[in-house]
Image 1 (cartoon, rainbow, N blue to C red):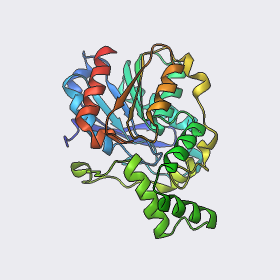
Image 2: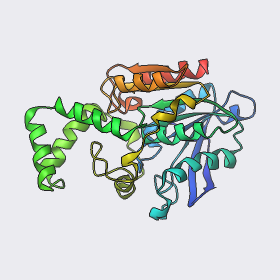
Image 3: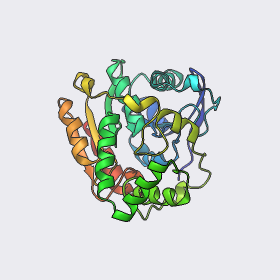
Length: 293
């Protein structure tokens, strides 16, 4: 994958955020840069590096959220709040002097991006919500539906260990992986060139903010729901999800219906990480949306 043309740190509440830029020559006079927010929480920018292919038309800015990736890792749960993760977006824009930008938030990053848009910041030219977490209740309902379609032996294994409190067992983790192979990174999940030098996942942050697995919410986000406010977003909005996504097409279409003028785009054959397993299709979709915005 391409190296960043510019990389460094900006100050944010709680610590420094690491960022990288490709297409830096566009910053002076090109279209608004695309600022990309990874999911997790506790993941990092690395899986989304394929988006730098779009740097032939505008600057692409990726960053690691606090306690994730290459950013500072103070490990202080006082920093692990929804408001603080949203505030990181302003820190990135201020630190890099981005008077205008388009935001792309993936998964939990879409939650931060949507809340930022609702705050009404100047210079936000558009918003893309990719495989979005916008309602934990809806997410868990979808997870229950997807689990119901798993083979009966996999369902039985998940339920038996969850009832017994033995979710750390190898058998349970194998069943979870079966779910992930269908709906997170659809098998064969070839991360290939993205695996080299990949920062470690911060499981403590993930479990504190979300829970032990994708279909179990016990953390800060367990009551999260921004859907009542989606209709107040007043910038161009596009939603993107995969055919087999944890945020499935009916849910993405439902969110789109709540946002006047928004569009919804389904990546065929993709799960939650279409930017990895359906890279060309995902990039073509994002490029099309950006040109319209």
